[in-house]
Length: 305
Image (cartoon, rainbow, N blue to C red; front, top):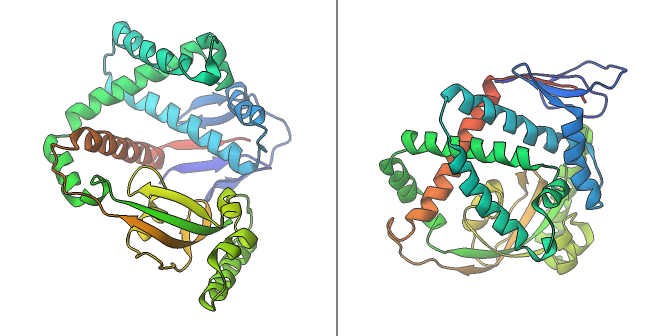
């Protein structure tokens, strides 16, 4: 497990130790000795501020997590010494530039201005592209077709087009700092479930109690597929349910949910050949997350917010 120490008065990662300091440092974290600057951290936070979002402790820790992953990935590909040419980076940059500048909200804006609104810069984007291409090259050698076919056979329901439509009630725990607050949230979701079991209308309970923007629609979050569009803990439960069924409370990274399935669309029989590109994308994403988790678990991380 990662050795994480936190020097913070505002936010504290789980299982970390806390030391309070008075002065604000120019560095907000070190990852295996490599520094993350407060300047870079603030630029990322400004993206949320421009969208009029509250910069809560949860948001701050999400930004720290993003920057930590960036450093860990850089250290990984540097250690592997994987060669990526300037021509490869340039070709990928042209694709990204075309995509960004063809977004209606970015019409007539130069690339540098678009990137600035995203808390980035051209040089950072080029570095990010280089890291992504290096990782892709590594995975091409580390992952075999047999690995991907095995994953497909074990997860066919993720690739056959099956979808479910669901509504939910969410008691959001992301801004809760104490165990007592989280226990109250669990009690609240249990009370809501009891009321629904007694016959209370699900949509009305969602409107009354849910912290999700879907509350105003009675908790309706529409259709989604098994993989890639919704968090795994939620999707796993939802796809095991029948139409009209209401779940017991489900814990995810967002908080506690009660799920109701309102429609199901069955998938069709597909072969690996039919969906090999999608399997490749999903499996490579999965392996990337596994690599990052392993790197994080072994890293020396100090957070100094």
